[in-house]
Amino acid sequence: SNLTYKVTGSHRECVRPTVGCQPMSKNRLARALKEANVPEDIVMLDPDDTEELKSYHQILPNTPMVYFGAIPDNDDDNISEFYTLLKTNGVVAVEIPADYIYNWEDSHRKEFQELVHSYQLELWAYTVNDAVYFKFLKDFGIDGLETDRPSQAYQVFCNNGAGGFFPEKRITG
Image 1 (cartoon, rainbow, N blue to C red):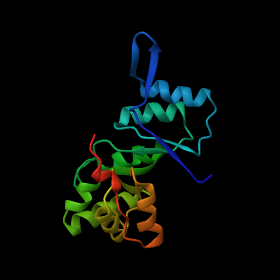
Image 2 (spheres, rainbow, N blue to C red):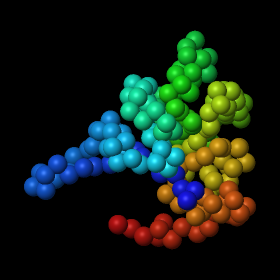
Image 3 (cartoon, rainbow, N blue to C red):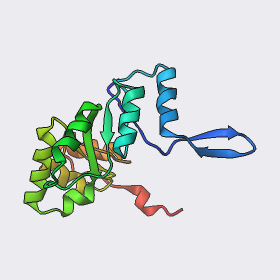
């Protein structure tokens, strides 16, 4: 299978049936994946700070990471140290909100992409569920994205389609 599963910190575990479910610690999740011998090439972890990243990498050194924490400004004095830390701890992609990319000026958008690429990292956007964003990000040259509408994203990115119709926009809950 060519599927990769991104594991986020929103997973829950039941402690006792009478108590209910509580958030699972990310380190506990990483240890559980390791103990279960989950193949390292089908899971990606998404640390949101550098300490969490280092901890994940120590537990699962061959599992790719998608970093979506705070990113320093392009002119920060420690920027090289930051991206080197990401790379040496298994990060394969930096993921930022799609709105950032969409709303940045063209020059800033390209400068950031080139910076990320200069460390052999991919630039991903989240959470993209709109056909307009799909098209914009494809034209921009985004390396990957997180979406709740994979078939529509596939249509735009792989079949040059328009993104389709989203019937769930007509449903209220």
